[in-house]
Image 1 (cartoon, rainbow, N blue to C red):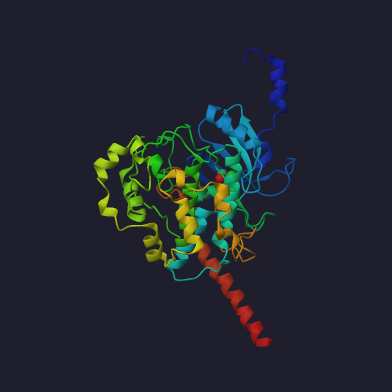
Image 2: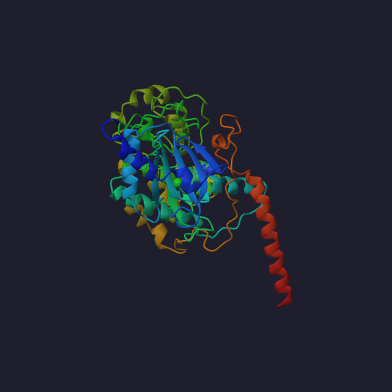
Length: 412
Ligand SMILES: C[C@H](O)c1c(Cl)cncc1-c1cnc2c(c1)CCCN2C(N)=O
């Protein structure tokens, strides 16, 4: 830093826009995750940013790591309606912290699915358009098709990374894929050390080849995760839910419990199903733990989906799901092939606003206090608002609407 003459440096730092000067974010933290923390902010009147809400993400740690730098350079080049757009990067020179500015998305699939699940538990129905899952799936695949055609792999697709714009946004009901690999400290699929990552890493969306030691991420790995998300949108339950020890110290990719769960839903892959299976690094562990997998012979995705959700194995919805969840990565469709599936061509067609004009039943994200490490830290459950609260609000507003409708019908 000595090489820059002091006066020039003073001029630069005087002119540099500081994130705290441009945006109001005191007490507006909405989430904490593996990546750092996120604030819902508005530009201060003096800032030249257009009005509206923004998400300010403060990256964990300090300094520009190689992967953060590469990902930011990528993010700035990427522009697609279903990919969250990076508006600005702030480097706080004093603290060497990185702040990323995005358009704000009020909802995400994690909170939405939890809302539907708790509504089911209290036997209160949430009215959603019939093409709700289809619209969300279509937009996720459009976004991933764009990323994959630019040779960008997401690497960590899960419901919390699929955002949906709220009512106050001009893009109401549009899906935005977020957290593009920023959560990855390494490009090889080693699970990030949990010390850095206070939020427990879930393996529920991890493709079987990753759990068996595959050395590189592929597009097919993203498509597997999308299949898991589709099943979860349909049943409101994580398809490959598996309890996880709080402190996963090993960074070995092999996770026996997660594999056990996958086999108890999908059945055990035969030589015909997955020719390359014996060549995977952890195949030895697999045989030691599961033998020939006879105990899973009667399980299959069709059996699971028809028993847990009455889904017919001949429906286009099920056919696409079983293509995405092929155990052999070579048999999974590309994003483009998935978009061409009959499921998206038949009525009802996917809509640009996934809520299709219906009321949005979910509450806004709540601001969280800075009680960083206590157990009920929202990031740990990643819950920003107690769901039943927003459920009650929804029922009350919905009841009023229904009553009004009935009165009008009586009058007419
Ligand atoms: C940075 C983040 O991806 C994000 C972006 Cl870029 C834009 N608008 C909202 C968000 C956003 C805020 N909060 C949460 C989430 C997402 C996921 C689920 C967790 N979460 C809470 N508040 O719990």
